[in-house]
Image (cartoon, rainbow over all chains, first blue to last red; front, side, top):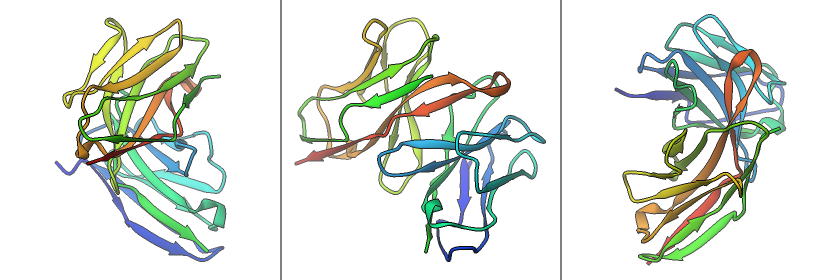
Length: 113
Length: 116
């Protein structure tokens, strides 16, 4: 099993550009999450999807949209990137009844100029 | 509201020395507590967790953490560290969220640097 995979690994954007971060898991997990990690701030939840077909806002959703394409895939879209969105983005997933045991992908490092 | 404070941003230590990474939390409800580890250029991995029962929990690689309800702490310890333990460690606490969902709140992280 590959676990949780994310693409791309690195990305540089100019202010105002858009992009989609992809995430997939092969563990048959119901729930998936997007976090951002900033120095000195730990991880903050952007959006989550408790199950296929549902999505909900986390702590810092402004400037982002998500799509739960199917049970495996959960994408994060930046419609108009801003320098404040420079961060490392992690996708995670968890199984039913074990939502707090989250499995993380390797991350996407995003720089917005 | 729940919060997590990791008291040290960086902890340098020599190989084979003991180490303690400190974590305090605040919560008005019962919580579950976690330690995650992040090795360089990797995602987070669950190291250990406290859900209920014995207040001392252990990981497979020699770390242990003790839940202390009166001091609202969940410090992580290892009696003898290895170079390979060099990583960033995150303490996390569960918190109720919308729709009956429980989310994780992470501390800012402690960077453990093990020196030969």
